[in-house]
Length: 281
Ligand SMILES: [Zn+2]
Image (cartoon, rainbow, N blue to C red; front, side):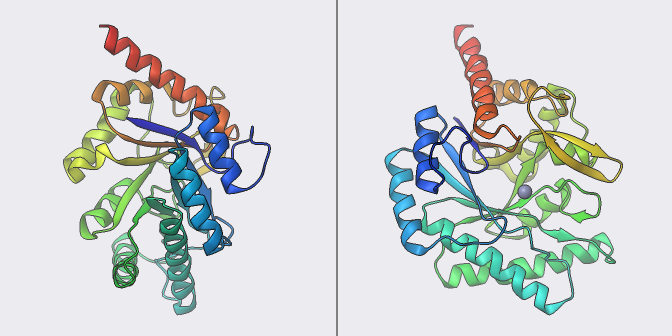
C-alpha cells in the first residue's frame, strides 16, 4: 500500500494548524502528511500529543522535515552541535506526535573530499543515534538525496549511511536525483533501476520506503526550484506510479510540488488507476 500526502498543511485546508492539516488530509483521502520543521522546531510537547491522537483517529501517517540548517560534514563544533540539536529535537517531537521518520539534508562538502565528508557525517550520525537510543526515542532518520552538486547526500552515499547505521534510511527525492544528475529519470525502467538498487542494498526497505516527489527546474549545478505536475515532466510521475503498482511496493510519497495536496491527489488517483488495471487483468 502506498500513502500519499503533502509536504505541509494542505492548500485546501481552511485552518493553519497541524491538526487542521491532518483532518483535511483525511477528508481528501490522503493518508500521509509531512510536518515542516524546516525553519526550526517550534511544536510544543502538548500539541505534539494532541496531533498524535488526531493522526491516529484519522489514520494519517506523519513524518517530519528537520530544519534546513543542518550540516554534518563541517569541522565547526558549533555548527555540529546545532545540527545535532536540530535533528534530535525534530526526532523527539515527531516521535511524540506518533510520526515514523524525520527527514534531514545531510550537509555540504565545502572543502572536504567526498570520503572525508562521508566519515564526518557517519560519526555525527552515530552520536545522534546513541543519544536517541539512550532516550528511548523510536524513530527513523531519513537522509534525503540532495539536489545540489555542492551538497553531500547522493543516492550511493545515503545508501551507505543506511547500511552503516541502525536508524538511518535514505529518503528518495526523485526530483533531486534527476536535477543533480545522480540519476536522470525519463522512464519506468529508470525508476525500476532505482528501486532495484535500493532492494539489493537494503532489502525490505522497498516495503517501507519514504520519498519526495516534485517536478523540478535545474541548472548544471543542480536544483533550482520545484514545479507543479505537468510543467516539464522532469521527472515524469506516471511511470513512477506504474513502477509502484507493478511491484506492489509499500511506502509513502510526499508531494513537494507547489500544488501540495492537489498534486498528491493527482498522483494517488493515477496510482489507484494503475492498481485497478492490474486487478482487472
Ligand atoms: Zn528536503
